Length: 457
Image (cartoon, rainbow, N blue to C red; front, side):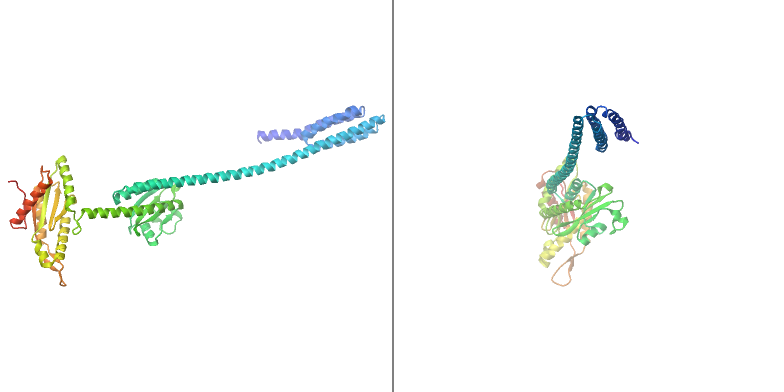
């Protein structure tokens, strides 16, 4: 039993036992003196009445008052004079009026108290409703603020994505922005792959995939999830066609994906698909601007731009650079005998060979007509001659098939002539190209199908 309960028990004992007992003793003493001096002693019972009424309750007070009135009525018969009897009767009536007045105020107090309690409950309910309305308004305000932040984030995302110069840069930046935007999980953006079972599911069903809890999922086998607790996969469309997916995985229980994440990602993928489409188109246009339409090699203009850059880089880092100019021997006879279509086919076939024979760091371009030019870096002249001689001999042995009017294509043999120049300390582009041309002219003049080096006189 607690201290508060002990105190409450003591108060109850005081109100229901001690106070009535003391009042009873006083009442007995009052009765004794009532018969000796009824007029003087009778009003003193009011003090006892009020004590027990306000401390022990109106039941005890009513009982006491009833006994007091009964005793007073009985004492009337012992009064000496008629005046004394009338006075006692007036006092009894006065005491009764006092009792009912107090009782009336008690009932009124209880009624007011109940009404106040009801009003307080109504007020509490109204306060609760008002607080609920305030909370709802605050939630709406928070939702509105969150939406504004989301729109601002989208603006930032769009601005950031639009600054990407290539598809690779765009996808890398989009992955980073998705992590920041969603705020949880790990993300990948990639082209469609049959090896990814989730990507295959999204493409086959043509709709996003959301697995909030992998432990309760029945679509995929448990070994497909690895250690993931939640997975979301959204398809990305480019120009109306399925391009790939944006895939998010979560390994933490408190970072599972929801429908809200799915809706935000759907908006993000629409934006990404549009920007990705624009980026791909820009790359295609850029590629067309720097590549030859027939052979797919770099253009002469682009080659000269790169040549200037490589010359400066070689000068700063003391690197070796060699230029080789390549010409198809007797190419005009192909056009004259078999037509320009056959000549174009031959150019594409030889271009494919050149592309395979040179390194990725070498810059290969179509110089014009049947001439090609290549810039070889990080290579010495002896090694360059060996490499180009292997190329010349390979083409000499190769069989080229050209389309003609007849059913079966014809087979021809072709050779190439090569002119080489070592740039060394040379920095003037026109002089370099002129020297390479002189070396090529020498190869053609001395019999073709050979490699010549530019030599200073």
